Image 1 (cartoon, each protein chain N blue to C red):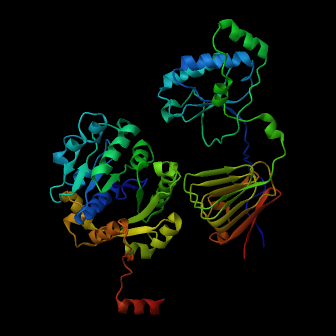
Image 2 (cartoon, each protein chain N blue to C red):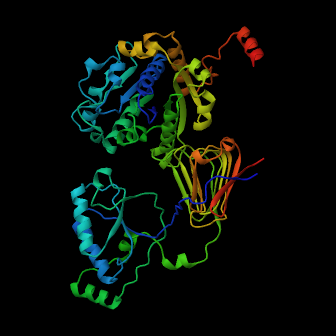
Image 3 (tube, rainbow over the protein chains, first blue to last red):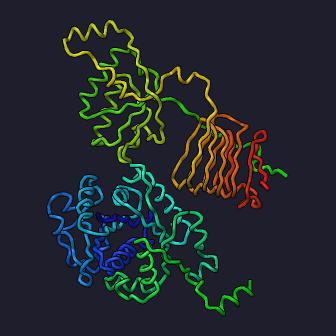
Length: 271
Length: 261
């Protein structure tokens, strides 16, 4: 049975869709079967980031309403044969998602895929709660900035209350993915530091993705950043995060603290 | 030295809990109202002067239908003081306010006012006798005499962080949190509040009128603090208390604070 991951944040624009695509591609590169599911009905974007917008025929809502079969709506990635996309509908709204329909789709997907990654819409309403409902684990995407941190905290509370796992009395595993991290601004105090965010949210960290133009460039190309340029810093961070999700333990490097020996000695002297 | 955090003329905001009857209507409403009428017939005046909350969670209805139901209830002298589980689109002017955070209590005992008449009417119609268990299930709340008993001191312990948007309400006694209370979260206790972590949200102690309740936290970054209705906000707190382990109590009408060393 496949593992269901929800990528969520509460706040918009923090990098949920980018992270869904990048983690999906990173897991698929290791040969596992992955489907990324867009739950942002009405404001879909995952198809663009995956570069599949011209190939969308049927979508999640069509499947739920019985207008299409699930395999008809799944789009295979052109670059990776184990990576699939289940797009959202752009012409409908979140009310088109029914709890029973989503449950059926999730159970079907679990039979065929190793990983089902759900890209949650922003907010805490129907779309977001349905996206998290069937998750086995959650990736909480947060920017090092107070409003994003507080919204993530709210989402963590909901993950512990409104998911099937929580209702069954089991513990939902939650991981923090810190995105758009700018070490220079963090050092200047314009941004929250990693430790501050971890102290507030108190869930395990699976990666720090540095702020980078590579991410924007990849999105505009229609490719997950892990496929567009697998050597750039954000891609490396996503590769490590994907391995941690799969259960490997790899130490986390905080960007900007990767100073050489000389830097370390110098830094100590200055302090 | 203890510091006075507020001036003496602050506004008192008091919490008070009332016991309400919760009605959970079922579709179709026509049949449910028939059941309700049957109940009302057997215990006349049950709903008179009693606060009634309508639980409409998961009902597939619209605002118009809900309004219709409320009007039907008004005709039966049942005044709905709040709606639980209503969609935001159903609320607004002319509708009862939304209620949330209600805690279940034990069932109401429904004492038929004239049992003889009730059984007589059942015999009259020749139908099966009324099923009291159905009505009891529909009216989850409290046996009145249970409230009159002397309350035992109680405490609540929370072993994980209280997240933004969460509200812990415990009028029965003390609340202890082993973890932090996030910005936008709140702890409301009838007794004292103890936080073994950072208090970033709100802590309200002694909300049922207990002036001797206190607030303790390992690190003070609170948005709002209140004891027995006297409150103070982050802006009014002395800056040198922020980030410190602090202990707060009430002295007359002023909140005083001292660092814990």
